[in-house]
Image 1 (spheres, rainbow over the protein chains, first blue to last red):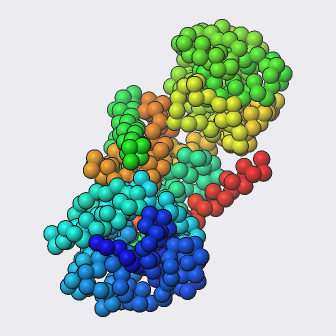
Image 2: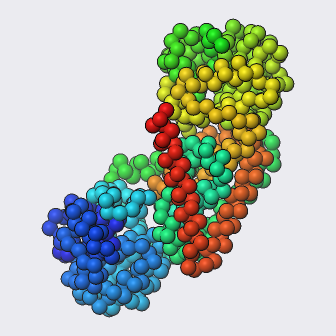
Image 3: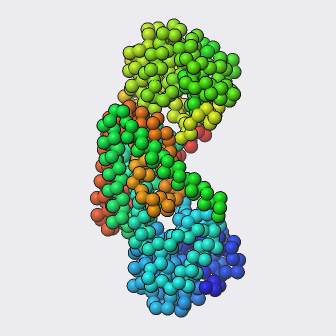
Length: 289
Length: 289
């Protein structure tokens, strides 16, 4: 893919960071933004995240080689309908959504022949929102999950992967179905569990919260409406993950029966060791990037 | 209390940090350590956490004005039996255990008349272990929960509180029963839930873990045997907290039924706002210390 013009639909934290990172890596790309509110486009232009912006998605994607959907997941359908007639032949479309089955299905239904959709999930972000928190290095050393299907042309897939690599990311390919199942367990469930851990506390207990509790519940600090959309979109997998968590809590309840607690210590140690191995692996990935 | 001699029973991360912090705040106090292994005493002396050490708890507490139990909770009973005959009249005993009902009961049963026990839970620490990680500032700005009973003499209580204040801590008083109930919810349950969140993942999902998952499960990185003792010692309260968490997970399951998700967004937002208020309060406490 020759990338002369990039269009970012939604210039919040993620979209704005894509603009900054792309400009840092490839200064000759023209970067166009779309946002619902004119003030957002002004902020994005002032931050250097876009060259110019449109309040109309169709106008924003005209002539674009690559279009990235960065709005909340719940707006994807409407966004695809608005841009479909305006895309140039051969345009490549991707997204940054936290779920992949629904957007892949919608793209197949809505986009015209001759343009190519490849689902992406760059695993970077923050509980902060807004282009004022955008950072050119947000994607460095992070992982991007890319979810081709049997219909995805290899050149479009490779172009999208090359774009994320240019922003400093490592790529993992998987099906949209595997993505949503795995993320339901490793991301959406922890978010829900963190919210539940806050919700169950009474005020007197919250008074005694230490650093451990604040860390454990950090991801519960995100925007409720955004996360509602993600959790609802991946409801079946989230429910399966909730069942698996409940089964582990039942195991714990049983382990508490034995006053000697040998099996309880093993259960705790096994979790500590798996987490430690994971942390070592992540640090190694960063150091060898 | 005139504090000429302090004895620290167990010179690991917490005990060692108490030694360093006490020396920094009151350089004329003689600091004696006990550890099971002679190498640990050598390390503690080299680190400057103690003046000298004994491998016998009875010898270590002789002449001490203040004795602090810093061994794992499961060793408290044995430790109290060993020091009881060697304590001087008027000695004050406290501890750093994460549970309070059992140690308060044991102290009442085992310690002789004329010495005074006051339960403490300095809420500072780390998932690291060992005197090599001890820090003089570990207790700065942190909260110390002190659990007197109707039998606790006011001067002993005030002496223990003054000691923790000298190390930079804020004090909150409560009954041992309230302590264990509140900590079961705000500390022991999150630890157990973090371990369950790791335990339920399959390896393919763990591969995709991001910073959010690592933060959420950080407290699951602690030592299994130590946490087994804490969870077993507070089993009744932990089970009640587990039930409350399960009830919130059931609520979530029900909220997922409604495709519009207004109540789900509210549930998520409420958790985010409560956590944010908590964070603001903690930051304010530190800034006004």
